[in-house]
Length: 238
Image 1 (cartoon, rainbow, N blue to C red):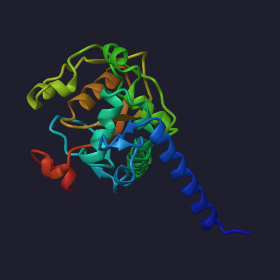
Image 2: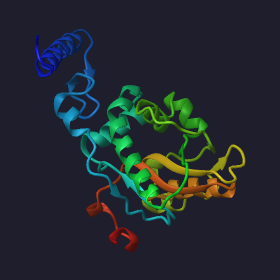
Image 3: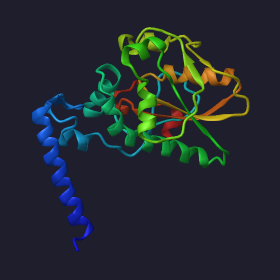
Image 4: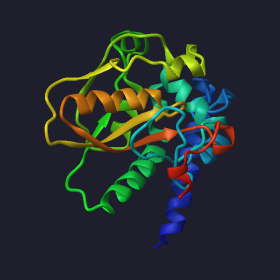
């Protein structure tokens, strides 16, 4: 009887043959590099993977530790943009493992403080963005990772973040988000796709706190590498 390794190798060969045949019948751009090949070429499949989780150095005053598990560059960046701006919902699945790693790191940090049950909330898209994209990208990745989540925030329409300069992002309206209901006594881990300045996370945390809830940590798929930031805050050096 074939061993497990032989079976997995045979399945991989069959899978590759099917994908090669489908690429000929229905050419599609790779999520990570846009090469006309498969939905995800072998090189990008290897690159879109979780790195050791790390804290994010935010420019905005984010009152909790933010965790990520990938740098916002290369195929990871392209996959996130494919999901958000290029009508590619299939990008959610390869990003799911990265988000799950960041969430696990955040939950582990919370557990060290002996905190009781924590709900996962996410930073929602505005109605205008939902109409344009046809999906909420953060929610799509959360669901692809099969993470339990609570719908607690609403977002009012505003300028797309990608069109704003760093200074404009830092000046984001603190009331951009609002809670759907009172959140008294509830504790949350807040999730978003990318942390660039941290201003969006800060605004979402403020909305939860105005409704009586408390955010204990945050997790994102990716963030700029430390070398690309203006600097790390002292609490992240410790």
